[in-house]
Length: 349
Image (cartoon, rainbow, N blue to C red; front, side, top):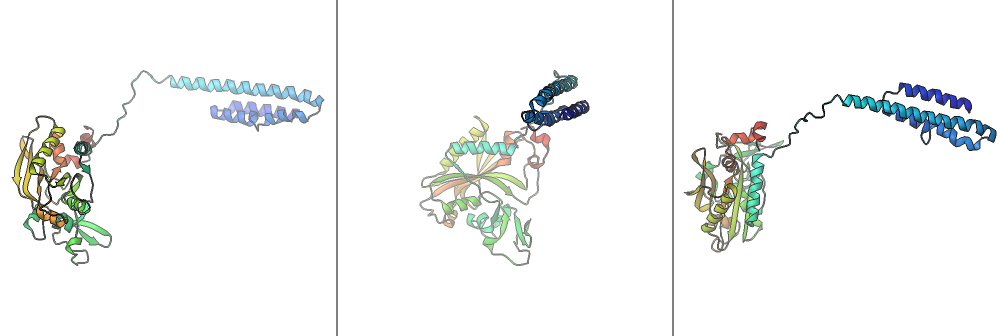
């Protein structure tokens, strides 16, 4: 037993000498002084020794235990002092590097604000699919096939293929197998958020008032105020006594809340197949007039398409261009910046 204690002492000294960090010192302490450590086992076995042997081995084991503890403590101080010396070379008074947080995209920012404004006016927010059928995007909105008004919505038609769907600007709507699909089943990327009017009215009875924010797609040339992909905020209010005066009041309240008191805008007549009469909303942008919304009183044929009685029901609908509202509010000179992916643009918001 005495020889065992000498071996432990020699090994502990060697391990302490070779230790390179505090982790190795902790391993040394565990190996010899831990619950199952070699020196701990010797101390626990003293009760099984004869009294004469216990009187010799006990003091030697206790002395070695104290030596190992002191050795570990001393080496630990050395490591700590060395670590502090290394850290002291860092200028703790020097300002740290600024951590850059994320930025909210301007379209997300203005959409949230618009949602909040309409929610405060008791509108509900609903969403609809971006891939639509010919029926919901056109037919049910009083734009039947071969109607000249369809030219105003340059459409991405979806061609059926073995692998799925892909877009093409094909007004014929033929499938990948060269077969013509039924008109109501022809797929397309929605050209406006108006199809959600039909979806909602098919499953709800008036009175109600909703907005539908979402992305829309049009196959057209791009410039500073036109893009192939852009956001819209559809609005629909239907009841027994809803009038154009109600529409005018809602739009005035909305634009005043979004842009502040003194905001300037104009109502101008226009034609849309799904409203009668039709109205456009114009605002100032880059020292010129910019259309920001198309609107009007819902056409009786649209009500008939969803099973409403047009003699007992009336309402108005509008579709604001989300990107154009953001361009005016944030003074953005080109609509194409929204989808540019340029972080210098995003970091301004």
